[in-house]
Length: 235
Image (tube, rainbow, N blue to C red; front, top):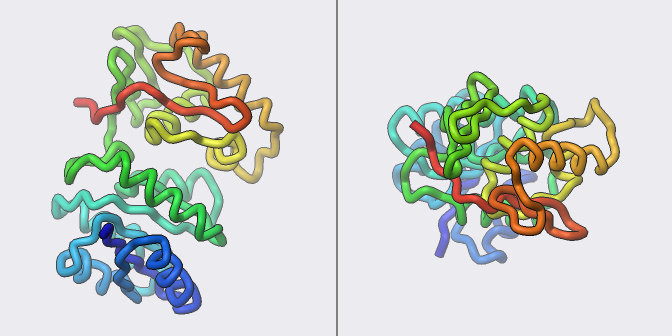
């Protein structure tokens, strides 16, 4: 049985979310604070950790930093309370594999857990914490915000680059247009779902990708998009 460590200081959340995860087939251990989460991470040996960012004392990001510094690459989903791009970026920079804004639908959390577990790297460094990620001849250098294909830099707008990054960080996962709008465009930049399609078209032109036989970005009709290329941590 897959083991989940749920760390959140809000009992109203853990008292409902813990049993919900159990009903969905997971074995669950609950930590009430960051210090307890670190202890249980070693004792319980979870397959995935759900970490609330805003916990008293040692917060979720500090817990994630300590785990990664100790060479523990157990997948982490961060629960954040501010839906800004800066908040999401901080979560990933600390080594989280994914993040979910509060309040959230527990069903969405289960879907994220299963998606993260599918792409887990067997104890190695996660894609989310990597400075470079690659898919064949495609390389994304995250600190410099630059992408290269066959060694040649791609001319991409900031939104198209952010879209490419998000899709590559979630390989083989179908991402709804609405989720992409929320994650990339954010709450303060309301646009129609057509904006996603426009940036996908820009990506395909730059990558020379065929929508009928894609090497990278596949359209899932009526739903959204999926990155179909194999993605690895770059050197």
